[in-house]
Image (tube, rainbow, N blue to C red; front, side, top):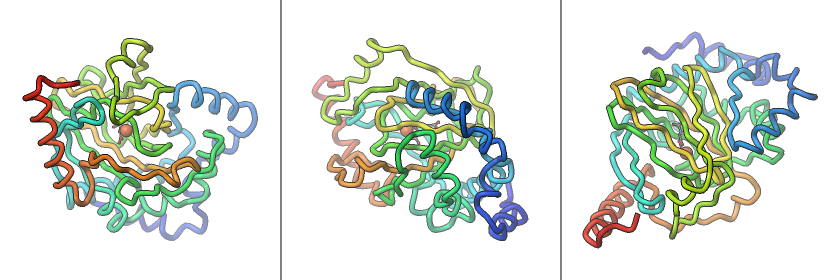
Length: 278
Ligand SMILES: O=C(O)CCC(=O)C(=O)O
Ligand SMILES: [Fe+2]
């Protein structure tokens, strides 16, 4: 789809981010409504928040995503040892391209109205993502078997905008195990799956969810039929993330990703030769 200049233009010209980003219903959530949202997010590490954002904000983001996909899409098919060799099979637009060429995503990410709302739900300050290569991610899954396999995020919070999704009989739902920890040397994902209940969430286009991504093990169910599932990920850190240094070479999406991807291929073939550890 063409980038909708009128929508982006309205956004750029709006006198207040607040009025553009938040639906009036967001104000009504202060009080008892908000308490329930806070508890659900604490309990599940997941919360749908699309009803709190304006349709204009969603359509401006959607137009931006389509335009970025047209220009910068790359295909990734890899398994990641630090998550127990779970697969990543999808097309992506990497963070730096989104930051540099987006029309509204970057500004939306920095809108005080948005972070204020999300901070009220999470009960913590949202800090800009410490790594510029993880601030944003667009993923498009459209082949049978496409999936964002089981993983955790390096940083505390992700806001995922569901741009396209097929119906649940195609797959593409999100599955979560909250209150779990990522040990990159020993991820034990199958143990977590055996010991915990897995929640599964379905979506319609226009849904947006907030995820406590560093302590919620999550994946998308592989597509079992051709269909299109497109999302935008915005990532924030919290206070505990500010001194985090990422040593493991598992940053397959990054600008120097070819080095990481080569390393991952090597590790995967070694663990295959050695009988596999995951
Ligand atoms: O596609 C989704 O809904 C999940 C995306 C995700 O986990 C990620 O971008 O890290
Ligand atoms: Fe994730």
